[in-house]
Length: 76
Length: 154
Image (tube, rainbow over all chains, first blue to last red; front, top):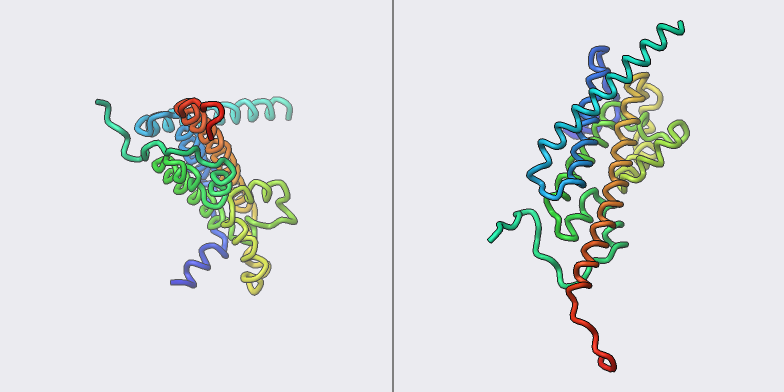
């Protein structure tokens, strides 16, 4: 068990190509949870607020990515 | 009568000390909030920041994620995470020497791991700033409630 646990944090994980962008979702979720937990006065309003913020961040980053891809193709 | 949230404890008599709250928040994410009575927030901060940091270390391996020579600025962010980041730093210097290069992650796992751990540290920095702001507002509320001092009397 100890070997399994130490191996978990010592050896790296191979991430499939499809999952590279997917790794953005948990990171965005944790950022939005921490931010909204700080901002919301009532903790009961956090789940909905963090979902909205998470979707907003993902949408904006997606749009920025599309714009940059378009600019890159135009300039290439 | 309005219901009191379960996670919040009653207001303390004395204002909490800001430096102690900040040090506690750095030591363990959310511990500062727990100490000033906002336990629900404290638990959320602890779970989210710890999971983010250790998920980063698990993805890239400790040798890739916490490497001061290569990830200079990110290490500063990771150290805001507190003693757990210091423990990981100690681990690569003293415990993981027998693995050497084969445990270093390649791109993109290396970048993802460093970003996860660094963002966790920066989120903890935000939490420290938040607990300081809350201590200040709590002190202001408690001071406004205190009875006026009478001259000549201690």
